[in-house]
Image (spheres, rainbow, N blue to C red):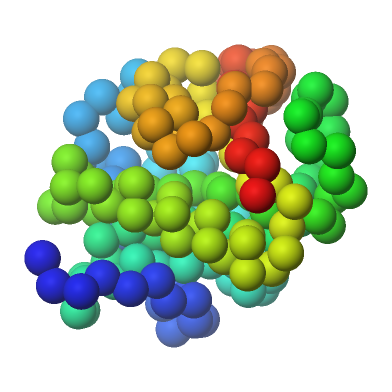
Length: 176
C-alpha cells in the first residue's frame, strides 16, 4: 500500500462518498449483524452533507482510492449528554467520531486503526479534552477496534435510528 493521507472532503467528493458508503454496505460481511447500515437509511446523503457543511467529513486516501472515510465533529450533540463521562467537558470541548467506514478492498489491513489515530490527532490539534464515539451494542468488531485503541466504555443508551429501530448503543471516551 502506498502512503495514505487524511484529507478533508470537498463538495465535489459527495457523489464519490455516497458510492463509497454504498459499496461498504453492499460488500462488508455481516453488515446486517454488526453496523446494520442500510442504503438510503444510514449513512444518509443528508447526514454526509451536514458533516461536509460543518467541515467534519474526511477521506483517508491511498493515491486515487479512498481506503476509508469518517466524520470527526469538534463538538458533541445532545445524544451524548446522558452518559456518565469520566472527562467533564462542555459540548465544544469534545470531538466525536461518526460513520467511520473502511473500503472493503482495504479491510483487515489496519486502516480503521490508522483512521482512529488520525481522528485522535485532529482532536488534540483542536485542544479538545476528550474524543468520544458510539457503536451499536451488536457491533463487536467496532467495539474491539475502539477498545484496542484505548477508548473506554462509558455507558449504554437505547436509542431509535431509522436503520435499526430501537436498539442499544455503547458509548466510548478517550481522555486527551
